[in-house]
Image (cartoon, rainbow, N blue to C red; front, side, top):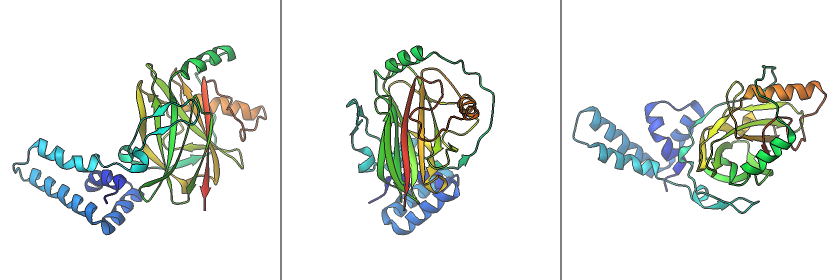
Length: 284
């Protein structure tokens, strides 16, 4: 059976645009998966036909590539329900995940432009944002298969996920409201309390836009478990207003200067209406 994750990566592998870890993953899959190798050969034949000006229509090419893009993993495509609130999370395929990048740990002190909101205002906005399913799912991918997942969001504030040393974390977001939301994730080392910046949400970036009415939309970057601490709590920060990593860092730095330990906090001292936690444990 063709595995969906490596199947979707074939066009990028053929184009030479995959980073080393994923390129090696596809190479290994091609060596052991006859169907995948046949699909790759068919794709390259189609490319050669197009390069030679032969008569393969755009529609025919679309049909060929659909065999790659429409592969779905049963574990990822099965409907799931959010543990709290009972809201359905739409099916999804790992066919939208793309490149593995890096994780950076450390601190800095950029300036912040975020206006500080009163607790009452934040509480009211939080209740409004929680009226529709809003949150994030994190999947553990090992050898291009989903072996576990956990969800946290406006209706589920805490979750845990075990993932092996060789695993990759794939993030997806859901926003079934009628308004745009903004999401950022920052990790805290459960042992040292040090901040952990994940590649999908790097330091120096803005919060990701969560378009209205979108369910289980996969973020196009994966995080290798080998780059994470053994136990790290991912803090999901959600807002109805744009914000940036500089805003997050400024508030966290201020808390540390005030001797507030970041580890074991249920809510970080960051002025966003909705926060949720998802603790990831690196399994042996």
